Length: 78
Image 1 (cartoon, rainbow, N blue to C red):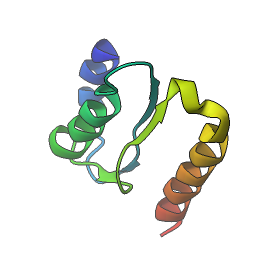
Image 2: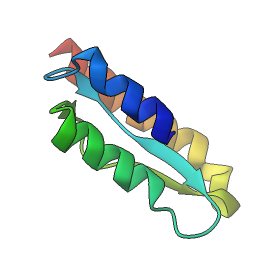
Image 3: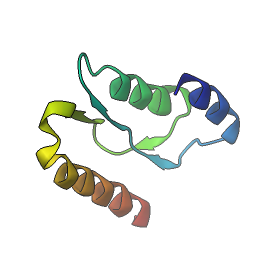
Image 4: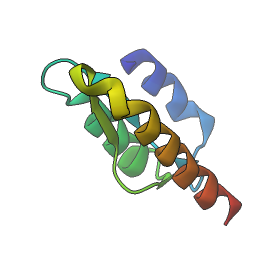
């Protein structure tokens, strides 16, 4: 993911809509770090907060991910 984030820096993403999400089994820091990079480094127009799914509780994760995707779509539609 770190390599992808370095590559994305060249994509001129300022002002574009974005969101960050991830499933984790322990500390769950990655979605927060990705979100902050997108917001503060790339200056993207981020949706709410990062979606963090604890891997052991993925049962409701599909619904949560769908809701997060709807938030992103709504923001993109204006």
